[in-house]
Structure formats: structure tokens, C-alpha cells
Length: 85
Length: 137
Image (tube, rainbow over all chains, first blue to last red; front, top):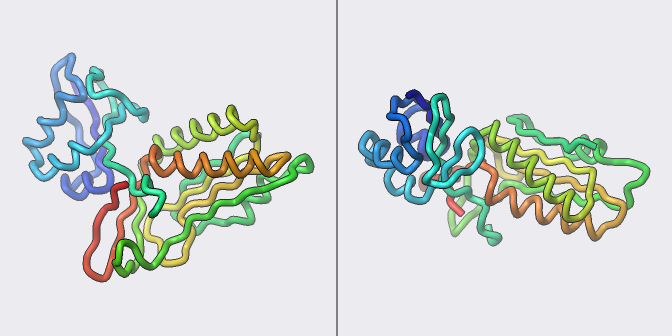
């Protein structure tokens, strides 16, 4: 099945694109996508380790199973979490 | 009223946002304005680049405002965030909360900005005199 993955901020710069379509097996979870991306873009590894994940514009757990046409985005930490900033 | 949510490349307009939440029943308006500072962790900042995941950011901001309404009963809220290149001194975010009394307006405004900074997918890149980097909280 086909899923759409969109890249923002540091992920966009490392992958060199805004989005791509991935062909994955049925029952593929968010967790399964992470090593797949690291294989393709090794420099993503440290960022993916710190990233949350959103499917169809809402945060989801790593175990979430993907479906045809889902929009997947890995979300690296935002800069404003520190009140001293 | 329906909350006002703006994600825009254009300069933010504080007066327009204040006007939009004003109402005869309002007794206090709290405004938080975040502006671009010229230094961070000892670095001299030249400018900032903000990037947004627009569809999700809007949805997350809507959720945060709904929670503020539930907790403090505030009903007149505007949230505007700018993206793209911002120069020193320019506003990156403006939160306006109008309420019958000041206490709810202060608390709701504080909650909205603090939660926005940690949960809304908007990223900041600092471009300094000695290089650039995406900032993580």
C-alpha cells in the first residue's frame, strides 16, 4: 500500500525533499518506518530518535498501524519548550 | 465567538487581533507577543527562519484554545504565528485573550503560549554570525 510522508525543518533539509510516497506492506506500523528511513537517509537517525510522530495531522504512538493513503510526519522537538528561551 | 487562528508569512498585526476579540462584555485583554531577539546562548543572531506544518499546526492550536476555554471559560481568543524569515525585533507570535475579568485572561494566555511552544509543529532555525541550526527545546 502507499503512504505519503512529509518532511519539515531538519528532516526536509536532510532528505532534500518536502514529501515522498512510500510503498509498504499492509500492517506496517510507524515503528517499522523509522529503520526504513534510516537506511535510506543515514543522517536522519539521531533526529528520528528524538522525534514524535503524527498520522493524518494528529500525534500517534509508535505502534500505530498505517493504512493506505495515510499522511505520516516525524516531528522533531520544537524550539520553544525551554521557558528560558 | 469562533477563535481566530492565523498562520502567515506576513507581518503580524496586533491591533487587528485586539479589535477582533474586543466586545462590550470584556473587562480585560491580555496580549502576549513573542519577538525575535538578537542573541541566544551567547550567539549573535542575524535572523530566524520559522517553518510550519500548517494543517496540523492549525488543528493543534484549535485544540489548545478549546482546552483554555474549558478551563477558564474564556470565549474570545486570537492566536497568530508567523513563518518564513523574521528579522530582529519582529513579532513571531501573538496571543490575545479577552475575558470579563483579568485573572482568567492572564491564566489562559499563559497556558496557550506555553502549550503552543511544546506541541504545535512550528520549528525555528537560528541563523547566527557563526552558522545556522534548528533549535530543539
